[in-house]
Length: 576
Image (cartoon, rainbow, N blue to C red):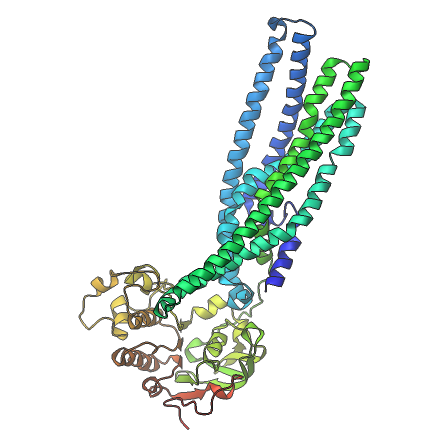
């Protein structure tokens, strides 16, 4: 995955401006037009300021003119300085506003495209990597828009305007500028090739740190129980140390590259100054022209030097933007325009092989999950039960065979149905249900835009609320992130109530009885019986006999599994 990720990054990093950005952010188009206009005006003001300064100094110190003779030029000079200040302020304000709009549009585009791609297409990305991409990566666009892009346009326009102005006064100075100005971009490219490896390493370290930190936070309760939190903290500190070293290495290269560009620009200006000074001493050039060219020459190199400096400041944005645009350019899967009859639909798996992470977990799965019945998937832990559930949801494309929805008048592959359309009719209870910080009501309605039953009825179905109990008091109860404040059994039953509230036609339950006491498990079993009475198709991953007794069909997944199990492994309740 990292190999593909870095290749995508390298393909986009070489471009100082990625034209794909304007396709996804309308704010960028208007900003680019304004940036070109302000850069052009700034270039004209730079030439005017140099000419006015040269004229005033020549008139006062060489021609002994008094203030009354040069005050119009002084007034114009003040006006030019004020205008340049206003232009710089307006340009920066515009840049930050454009960055805010662009960030918002990119985030929404990335989230919508990720949802449209579906879990199967996003399997190549780690959660920490995507989180890093749409948070800190996109936030770096502030520097990109406010510093780097304006300077990039100035670097394209100002040297041309300065060279044109110099050409009207002295062709030799213009020739020197034409020969030396391109050296700065050439050295910038050479330095960029050298720094690319260091920047790659820094970005990879940051993504690894983000993913590792996310995993530790998610598993912190388990680590505390087994007293492994301190060991993981030490590992996290080591990963952070590596990222700090990579960051300092990039900063060192950035400072060294800035020094190279400064040295090159200083030598170029020195060549221009020597040429002008020699001719001025020999009387081949007047003082006003010489001063004008000396003031103007550094302005031709300054934008290019600043581009190099701001490029390093915007590398995070350039990297993140390239990868993000690669994600947005990922073509959406083509789905069939079908409308399955979910009320009478079951599943059919024909010689299916499933290989999440390029490793085959189950192979040759051929079975039928009937409509309107409760089917239980059983087998030892690790045999592939949850993997099959993921394929039924369309989250995992089969490596071989077909996972199909089948109803009396037709059938279609699950992967040919848009994820959103499928999940509108399928309820899923994962092994570790998501509980967010907020009230029980907010967690109950998470993902339920159009509830099919009342809150109280859903809670009563899973025995979280006794008949006639205080529904409002329970619904207004505050819980913490990850279910803090609720027992594991209450968390699972709350998540099951969330599934029932949607009234889905197909229900997939991944170990709903895990971590439940007998009374809570009985409540889950009653909810499963109620779903069968409503004619729903239910697939449940079960280990304990109490839930197996409520299943119409028991499917032993271990006979399809590629894992090796001890022959003495006994699954309670599994029919012989």
